Image 1 (cartoon, helix red, strand yellow):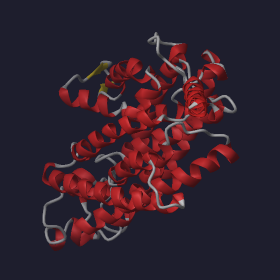
Image 2 (cartoon, rainbow, N blue to C red):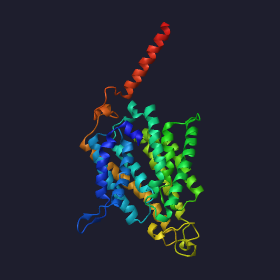
Image 3 (tube, rainbow, N blue to C red):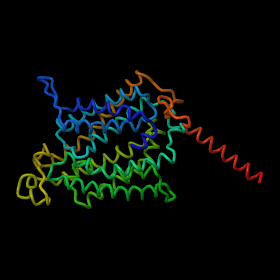
Length: 386
């Protein structure tokens, strides 16, 4: 988040608009009287629904005009609500404790689809698309904040008897992803050196991976393992898949959203499916209900499909392909409409001075590099004179 804000101020200007819209879209509507609920819970629902927009914006940051961002934000919320309704209410899956699929996977693939149709060709070659060392270091404070607050994010919607378990499992997953992700980063770099890019994302990927129904059922070692898988996948996709998307698919992900949200979210989805497979009728309704776990899980409030014959795992397996399909189609629609509203020339991308008043000492990356080279030449001239 800090990295995105340092790259483009547009985020903090339109996010309040998105929060207001999501309060209306995700509120419980009574279609007979055309009314909606307005409560603390609905406000929380609205704030949670801004996250897919923030995730999608990470793919597009710096490459879209403010008017385009507003269009994409409003359409993102509408299609997020539609996808959530399909996956949770029609299909009957559970993704309420963290939203690994309905929030993270949807936001990532929606943004990628928008980028595929709305990003000018050659956007990845702009020098300002690369983070500066100072901004990369600053962004680590954002990662640290997310690391600390992520357990509360995952556990808010969990049943009261499982909130402590979800919070602890999330912390363990974050720990596993931090260690495994950074270790994988050193290996993938080839010189056993770490990169700030991986440190920003892999340490949070475990929380994303633990954002599925698995966080209700995982034991401590399972939670740590799931988080470690999320961290490794995050690092791997940041080093290899991101480059493949640019060179072969023409999709440029500005801040590495797919590596931090998309693929770790799929890890969480798979973990949730496998964790639901052992649940049989005795565990859900019979004598083993209280012996399977050391705490009580209100299965009736969690699973809509609980016949004990693998139906819960089956319906959980359906939501990822469904979400990806909806996100890709609606993302391309949103990107196409945004391009009809306005476009931004390549030379104006990634620069705050295009749409914002900036201080006199503001520099683009090219100007910054030119100053460095000039200073180096002056230093060399001084040394030669001496």
